[in-house]
Image 1 (cartoon, rainbow, N blue to C red):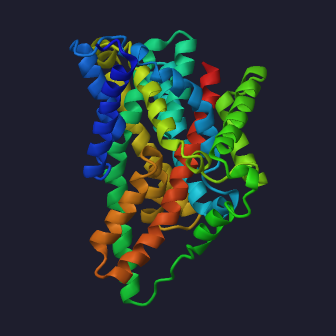
Image 2 (image 1 turned 30 degrees about the vertical axis):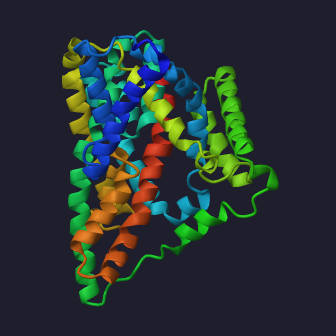
Image 3 (image 1 turned 180 degrees about the vertical axis):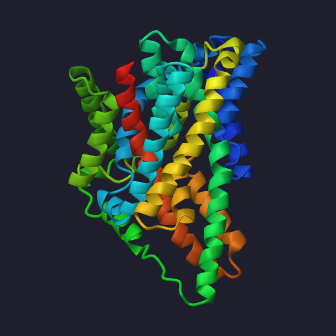
Amino acid sequence: MLANPLIATVLIFALIALGEWLSIVSRARIPMLLTAMTGFLVLVWTGIFPGDILEKSQFAALGAILIGPAIVHMGTLIPIALLKSQIKAVFISLGGILVASATILIVVSLAFDYATAVAGVGPLSGGIIALIVTSEELAAVGKSSLVVIPALVVAFQGVLGMPLALNFMRRYALKLQKQMDTNTFIPMDASIMYKEASSATEQISPLKQSLTLKLFYVFVGAAIGVALGELTPIHYSLWCLAIGIIGLKLGLLESKSLEQANSFSITMVAIIFVVIGTMAGVSPQDVLANLPSILLILILGTFAIALGGYVMSKLVKWDVLKGMPVALTALFGFPADYILCEEVSRSVARNKQEEKIIFNELLAPMLIGGFTTVTVASVVLAGILVKTL
């Protein structure tokens, strides 16, 4: 029965759905990937799932094809003009991951080896795509035993990052509240966020109205990126990301292109099948053998990101309680950053108007920080570092 592709797909999909449900009810405190990957490992190790259930599913093969289009889509998420309007948030988030990357590459390389350090750096500052880019290259250079490192780093990074960011954000919100009480609060102009985001979708060509054509344009961009990746020493993920950014700027692609084509959810589910597939050959011994390096990368990386955010906040003259959570978005990204803004504003505010002011003050830099690190910088970082293995 489990040999049937649909049944095998539904069983693995059930783990992803369970993870999504737990993430929603816990307000993102239990990451979806943590539930899906650990559940898959336990079921395979105990013999409930056959070891080749992913091969029987065949859905991971679709996910492998969709990685390129997903990266092109990531490049279309936020207009360049919006990044410029939040340039301080961009600098702070980049500062956090640069300090963390340098620290991990030095310390983990000395404690273990360089490949172990590279296995953790990209995924620490990002998410699923950085994980896949790193895992693919580790397998290609014969270091498949290390794929457990990026997978578990991505699974556990939010568990450390979210409580820390929440603490800083609450303290900053209380500061804002005091400023409002003393009439010294100057609100940030968040209107540009919505103006720029909406302007990217204006004046859509009739040829872009068809969902099929919308999806085709994204696939063409991804195919060009993959071809350039084979013809040049630059990883295909960087080409796909650049094509998405440039395509949005030139009006060749729409903002949030896969969402516009009603294809984002199925794309992400298929890619998560690929992520789970990276764990298919992992044994309990592999997890135990790599656990010390995973813990070191997580603890050291979290501290270094916060430190980088603190230093950059001072340099750009931002309150460190506002800047450090922006840097820490590297550890969880969207939608956790949005949920944290909601939670802090609701719990600290004394009325609806105050809640809205605090929410608007927190949201724009947090979203930009998450986009800069999780969506862009992590893919760039992973794409560069894997070529040094």
